[in-house]
Amino acid sequence: MASSKKTNQVALMRTKGFMPATEVSTKLGNDIATIYRWADSGKVVGMQVGRARYVEVISLVNHLGVDVARIFGIITEDQARAITRAKAKSATGKAAER
Image (cartoon, rainbow, N blue to C red; front, side):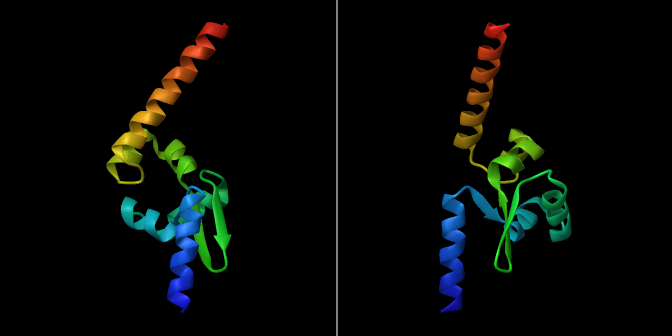
């Protein structure tokens, strides 16, 4: 029963744009303490739910960079392209305002 509850919690957090800190640690090959430190220092947005800690994916992408996040499997190729297009569009709009 507890495993099912945890699976549901992880699925819910994913829909909210969060990834378990343990998964981030595994994908990046970093110690879990590093991921906690990033969250505690504000480099990434972190959230604790019960005993589990989660990292907001977009804040992780902003911290690592789109290419690094894609290479390590934090985001998909399609997500990387969409983020890159959105950033380019935003930069073009800001340049037009000047």
